[in-house]
Amino acid sequence: MNGELAFFLTLALFREYYQRIGLVASEYIHFTSFNSIWFWFFLCIFWYFECNSIFGLQYSTWCQANNNEEELLELSKVTRSLASRFVKKYQLTKNWIFILLFAFLSSFWASTAIMYGSEFLQALFFVFLPIPTLALIRLNLANKILTQNLSPSELFFQIRLQRRNSQLLALFTISIIFCWVIFTMLKHQTIWN
Image (cartoon, rainbow, N blue to C red; front, side, top):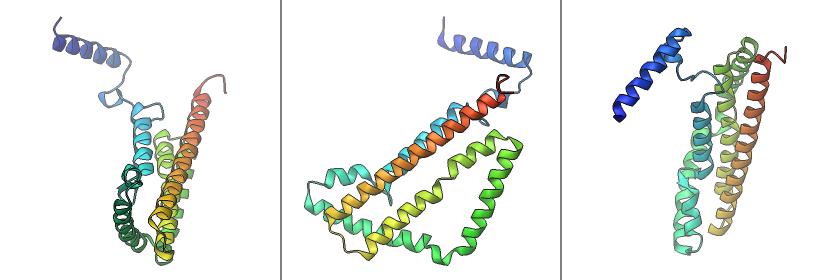
């Protein structure tokens, strides 16, 4: 059987089945719930990039330059300039109105998502909730880089520590989301009621 023909026959059967149970085409792949593979894929990709990139430099670059003192010195210079730019952009003492606005919007978002039981809002809330914590961890590292005169090896140690903290935050976040998903699924089952 031709591959294209098999694909179109499968697609036709798929559409016929979902039309019989009353779903529209946008509901074939559930983007609006926790059981969507796209939600978990996005979550894992997001945390992978956030844990491996520090101020735009990949952690693997630091690992490769660890044995070469000249490369490590060059990376530390680049990191200092990127950290300076990061501190200017996200300095907390100048942005209190944005912090208060963010706190209000996130608490409103959480209460709306939980009170109305919208899985889409809950999923987005749990994905974007740890981003300010991650920004604070990075801001702390940037301030430490700028205030202390760290040698390249000490800077590499601080970056390794920051990566470990980011990975722990990712593990904690994914664990909390997984527990909430299990709770939500059990709540929708008949045995919970």
